[in-house]
Amino acid sequence: MSRLSFKLLFFIWMWPVLGFAQANDVSVRLTVDKDTVHIGDVVHIESRVEYGKSVALSGDGLRGLPKNEYLEFVTDPILSRDDTLDEQTKEEKEILKEEVDALVFLDSGWIELPAVVYQVAKHDTTYNYASKPVKFFVAPVIKAGEPPQNLRTIIQEPKTWRDYWQLFAALILLGLAFALFWFLRKRKDAPRELVQEEEPAIPPKEEALTALQELYDTQLWQQQPKETQVQLSQILRRYIEREFKVPALEETTREIERDLRRLSPSQRALLMRLLNDADLVKFAKMTMPEERQRQSLLEAISWVKSNTNG
Image 1 (cartoon, rainbow, N blue to C red):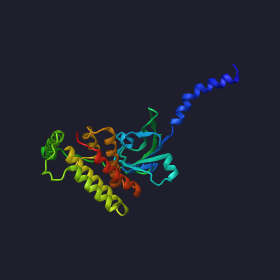
Image 2 (cartoon, helix red, strand yellow):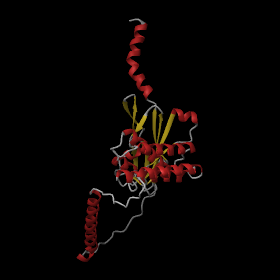
Image 3 (cartoon, rainbow, N blue to C red):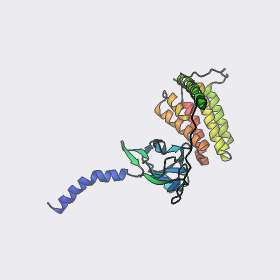
Image 4 (cartoon, one colour):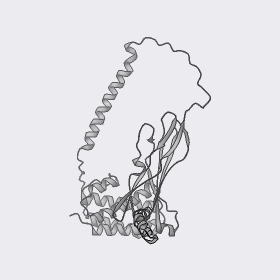
C-alpha cells in the first residue's frame, strides 16, 4: 500500500473523531470550596459551563445531583451568567454558573459528588457533557489521636406506662399532621379556578401596552434597572392573567409556560426569555446592560401587540 493510500484511509477513519472534536466546544467543571469538612459542615458547590454561541445548552445541572444519605441542599441552586467577559469573548462563548450550599451529614469518610451532566444540541445532534466527579473528606468531630473518655455504665430504671405518654402524644400529633398534609395535598391537586374580579373598562392589551409605553418613556432602567425588570414582569403577568384567564401573578415562570402551551413556539419562547431575564435580575442579582433593558421593553411591547388569544 502506498503512503498516499495509507494517509487517505487514515483520514477517512479519523473523520468521525475529528467531527466530534469540532462539536466538542463545551467544558463543564464542578468545584467545592473545601477539600476537608467535619460532620454537619456546609459545603459551597459551584458548576461552571463554558460553551460556544453556536450550540444550545440544556440540562438540570446541580438540580440533577441526587439528594441521598450524604448530601442535602441547604439553599436552592442559583443560576447566573458571567457578564464580566470582554466583548470579544462574549461574541464567541457564554459562561453559565450554578451555585448551591449543601449540608454534609454522613459519618466520617470520603464522599464523591457525581458528575453534573448537560445536553448540547448542535447540527441536529445532541451530545452529553459531564463534569469530573469531585471527592472530599468528611472528618469526625473528635480529632484524630484523641479517643473519647470512658463513660460509666448507666443503670436503667424499670419503665412504666407513664414513661410512654410522650410517645402516645407524638403519635397523635403525627396522625393529625398526616391528615393535614393529605388535606392540603388534595386541595393543591384540585383544579384551580381563577377568581374572577370585576374587569376594568380598558381591554387587557390596551392596558398592557399603555403601561409598557409609560415604563419605556420614563427610562427608569438608567437609574433603577432592577425596578424596571420588576415592573416589566408585573405588567406581562397581569396581561397574561386577564387575557388568558390563568393565575399568572401567583405562578412561577415555569408554571406560566405550562399554562400557555396554546401559544406558538416563537411567542412562548420570547415570553419565557423576558420573564426568565426578569427573574435573574430580581432573584439572582444579574446585571443587565442599559441597552439590553431598553431592548427588553421594546420586545415586550412587540409581543403584546402581536399576541392574540385565539
